Image (cartoon, rainbow, N blue to C red; front, side, top):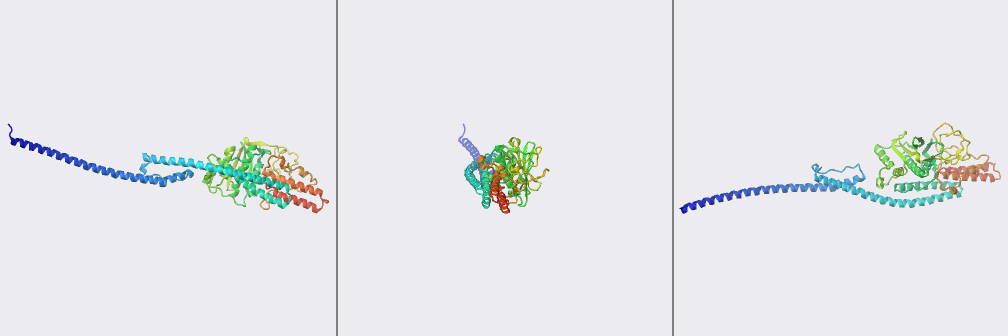
Length: 479
């Protein structure tokens, strides 16, 4: 039988062992808790650092990267800054931030296109009204030109008509850039007439020297006449603006394998490679044209050329330099846009430069003033715009060209018979035909006065007839 002291001793020993085990467990638990607290503190510190880094990255995105990405839509040469932490590139966070920028650029481009389309629609409507008013003014000026024969008034009317033509050209170019139609529908015309018609729309057109090397009768189909005139006018305008006022702009009309080329060479400063590349992109017409891409104020000439080249299947190249150190611009008109007119039935305008080519045996000179060749050499050479007697344009007074007519021969009645038909019998008068119309009108008036004079052979009557004809014709070549 176990005695009581032994039981007490056993219980005490068991209690001691239990206390020791409990103390060891408590100690291990406290150590584990301490480690967990340290890990939690480290994780909290790491989380705080990540949060600060993410906040800094988002602030950098909003302050630097988003504005740069939005500007890059309009200016592709700008660089968008990268993330603050290069380690985020390629991570889910970095990919998410890049997607934000891409979505922003897509939306900015879409909104920019919509806003620009609305602006173009508004400008298109405004230019349509301006064009209509300018056409009405043009008709009124031409009626006045045909009604009155006072030399000073005729000169003033021609100056006003030329200024109105320049304003009409600017409105027409703005309308074309905004997607409007060219504004005029013409009948088939000689290509040289379209070139000189574009030349006549410019200030400083006296500096343009046209060399016509086309086959006689080379013409444009009706829907290509006005686009070619607009393109030539804009190419010449650029050449005149970017070259010294004492230099000439040389235009050559040549046949090529697939059609005809109109080459414009200036002696200006030329363009840098970047400027040339940008100009070529604009005239190619491949990319959409936005008004905000054209500067402030917008320079619309090249943009209008791009619209027309894409719309009418023409080709323009401005990527090469001219032999004179400036820029060479080449307009290519393919064969499907070319036609042929009989020069005997429908000769070019009297002020158009004669061609250096001869199509066959020389025929008798027609009664039209264009066929009157008094002193034209047979050898091919460069020509400037001439009148019926071979006199060049470009030395007019008050900024207008002069065209000196041949003195009346013994049969003055033949002059009005050789004149062009009146404007009322034709559907639409080309700008370059106004000179011929007024010249014929005034020459007929002078001839009638000389016949009706009591002493037509006296020096007074002859001088009056010649002075009247010469004064009116000086302003006639402006159109």
